[in-house]
Length: 311
Length: 129
Image 1 (cartoon, chains in turn yellow, orange):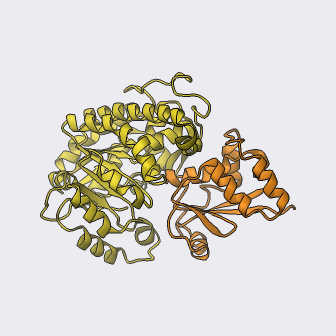
Image 2 (tube, one colour):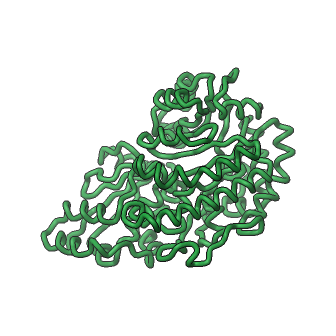
Image 3 (cartoon, chains in turn cyan, red):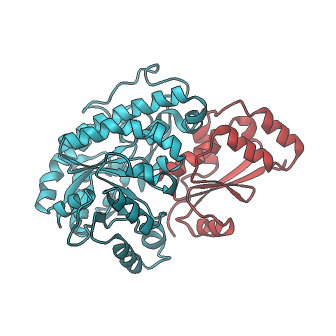
């Protein structure tokens, strides 16, 4: 296990071999025979799942949680809990009014599940250090958090009610910067902004509603001496150049992108890149051979700035 | 029963994947009058049935909203009006097309989203197998 190798790769540097990062999320709960809903609300179970998963998979890095409802939860959105999945956000407080108009304020260390994450990190961090495994903090990106706050109307508002959409995304970006500070305090080595819905918009919309609202968050991460990353899901082809132009050290993508295209764009911009293992087709469904998929990914990723990880 | 517009949403899993979740919500948050005109289903690629539907509809990316068998919104969460327009184009009757046109300015209604998602079975059939 090699924490520094992972950090180097995210920073776009050459590594002897590709570091390996399982974005285990609630799979950690499965590995310790606990339901996801219980696991995500218990710091001791979180730490246990994290450390056992890191050991089992000999991970070079592992996310503290992979749950994009943390920020929304701490802002008062209601959640639906699942025994085998992350919670879903079921209410949107800003479908009619701006965050200021409904009285939303920045989360504190005491809001929502932040105390659980602080405690889980406190327990897990020394054990992960012993394993030489990096801890990853994952922030809900501004457009995904804006969706949690305003609901699906945000994707219409970015065209029709730009002031409203900017207001929501700006608030979400401020929350992201606060979350970045929390993860830095927890001792995360790599802090990723995770904005899956940012792949579901046009490039112009990305530049207008995502790029400006991650700047402060990235600055908080970089100023804290941590390594910054941007995770995007889905078919992000149309916005990947915009992702590369963010001020993060690296980015990560999912299984729907062409790895050669991603690698070439990342290298052109001096960014680290990761992901793309076929989580669904190979690891979940077994329609492709996971072994062959891994070989293809490793060959395409190479040894410069590449992290071997599921997509 | 009156004819309805058939909508299939191809997803990874609307619980796990936020993009898939908001694709589903774009349908579930349509106003009541439109809910009466449509019938929609989530097809998670994590199930055999979902893979079958993905192949049948010639899906290319996830998530995708298909209307009357056409992959219309591929990795783009639709604007309200565009969604209405694409449904209207494929409406089975002129009267339904007119009704949809008259609701073009109404906007999303979030009051029954959870109920509508539940009725559509969103998140219920997303287990690999």
